[in-house]
Image 1 (cartoon, rainbow, N blue to C red):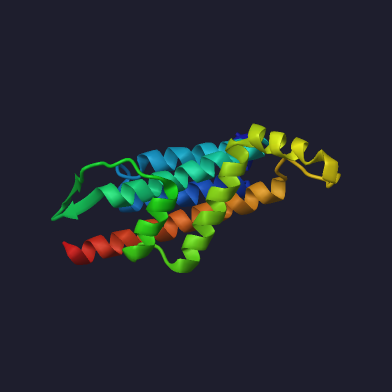
Image 2 (cartoon, helix red, strand yellow):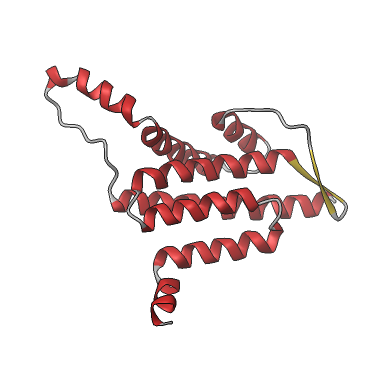
Length: 174
């Protein structure tokens, strides 16, 4: 019992619980995929799988933006708009152009994407760095705990802001 209460009080669990409660209060169904990806990003970080955590943060961001673009509130219900496959940079541009995301948040989103891309394409990074051996510049392919935690917190903060802004905007339009 004591270990269970300890696990609920660590920073990662608090981050997850606060995010879950906030997004669930807006709409649990619509944000269910994003919530699962955040849960997985937190679990990866807690288990010292920092590269995987960065990839999951990128996936959670893409999920949130895709959700915000494809679901529209009509009266007291949400309706799914036609789904068109698009890239994360295009989703960021859409969100910025539609006042879902501020330019400052777009920079954060692009940083999250960049960290996730670096992590997802680690073999390519290693190959690129090995070709640069002649320059004898040091490189690294790992992610530190601090970088992972900072990225996770930035991702969650951004997701919560986007969900809240979208919710307010949807309420005004209905």
